[in-house]
Length: 315
Image (cartoon, rainbow, N blue to C red):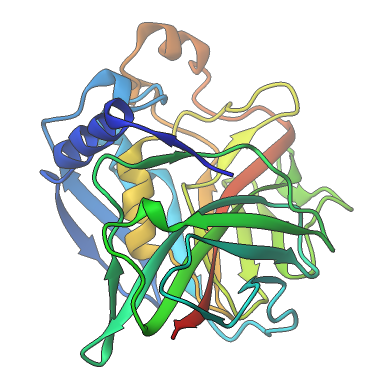
């Protein structure tokens, strides 16, 4: 069961959220072409990011990673994750609802958080949580074939249950990776490291100027790449200064522009070189002074959120 963490954590989240609302963005391109972004912002603080470049460089997506959405991916693994309530109908006096989170035939994932909607005036609206409420996960693994319980306490919400229709939203988190070899002439996927099945994640063979990695959603579920891909090795998480930044603004941008529906894919193109003068930290300038990835084996990672819904009634 989730633990309720009170005001201090929520206040921090709210402050950070308000800070990030000041960003001005201009999107160039369409869903069918490479999507670039230019952002201007003067409110960022150093602790908001873990990358060795300034905010203006982090937000220069055009020169960091090119993103291209693709369609017509075969849906071969529908409903690989499911959620369902233990009963289809509950009474208004219900204090707790047990939600079963099921991994039917998908990679191991971590169950995360729930929220609810209610049916009102012909549409779904948010069923609000009480004020000063946040959740802390417990780090559970949902392996293939497993079912784990998620407990929804009605004390979490401002309003009591009333006769009506309700919808539960939930998501699971995945951390996936694949490998490639970079040589003086080409980039080759490492055989056997490709991810296949419900989700496909692999590096495409190419010239050695950019790493082209594709993620395909073969399910009927909505999937959100949380950040841009990371480029590392088995020993080091990050060896590329312009790959995944870990900045909250990058996650917000990805949520707006990289959400994949069932049967969609996304192609990331990551240049193997960078301008050392763009690095803001002297230590990082020294670390990345070569200006390019050396020949060798690299680990490409991607973090995913997979969204699930189910409904129940109160009578």
